Image (cartoon, rainbow, N blue to C red; front, side, top):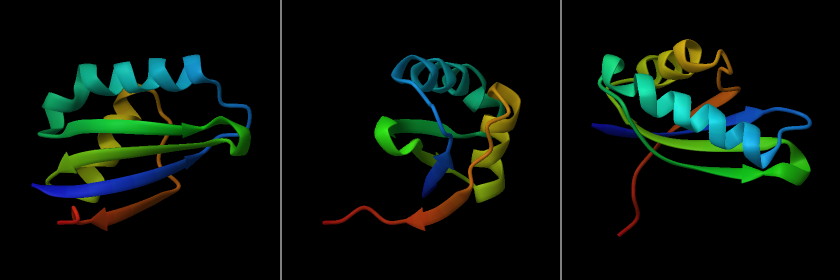
Length: 82
């Protein structure tokens, strides 16, 4: 599987809203053969970062689409450092 790090720009995002969106991602991830690994929130700047193991960028974003409709603004293929 490939690792993807995505960025969501959401003005006014709260810790509670980010946690709820991530929980919904976890509920649908298996339908797309995706594993949502973790997420990080920069509440002050309105950004959520999500790390996913997925077969493609599209599959990772489809999890977001079905779970809550908050599609990523950017998606990067990344590799874990050694």
